[in-house]
Image 1 (cartoon, rainbow, N blue to C red):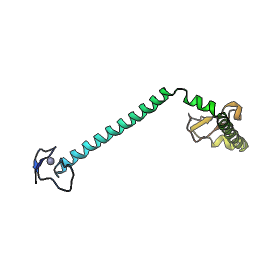
Image 2: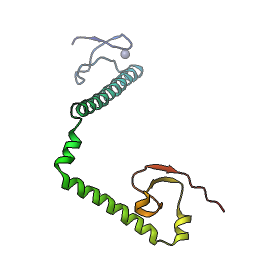
Image 3: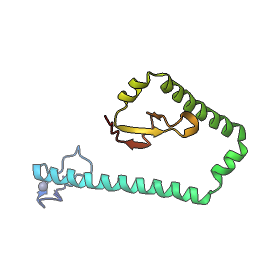
Image 4: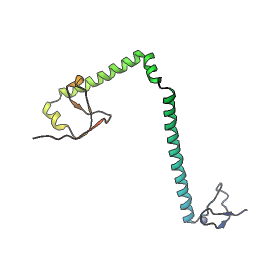
Amino acid sequence: MESIRCAHCQQFIIPNPRIKNQRYCSHAACQRARKTLWQKQKLKADSDYKTNQKDCQKQWRENHPDYWRNWRAKHPKYTERNRLQQQERYRQRAFKIANMDASKTYTSIKSGCYFIIPEAFGSGIIANMDASIQKVRLILDG
Ligand SMILES: [Zn+2]
């Protein structure tokens, strides 16, 4: 069997036939070096992949600047339904909160992430939403 040189400690070793493309001996330090290198390469590959994906999406948007505008124009029913559903969700949420005991509502509000509902949907009521839109720190006076 042909011997190989460990990529870390440079010692000649007989490679383990069960390991494909072995480049390191079995010393703990050499195995550590192998792992570290592997992690480095993986992190780099991952970040390259992410960057590449971002670039692709950006590129696509740049090449199709009117895509969503066109899509909405071609699907007015869908767009309108979406808008109405969104409004209905706002309305129901505001209604629920408005029906709660006012003092309870007030004291149960905690600092956190809130979505501020526009005036039209519930006269300035602050409602907790799934999406964290605004971070609100509540300061109660009195
Ligand atoms: Zn070694």
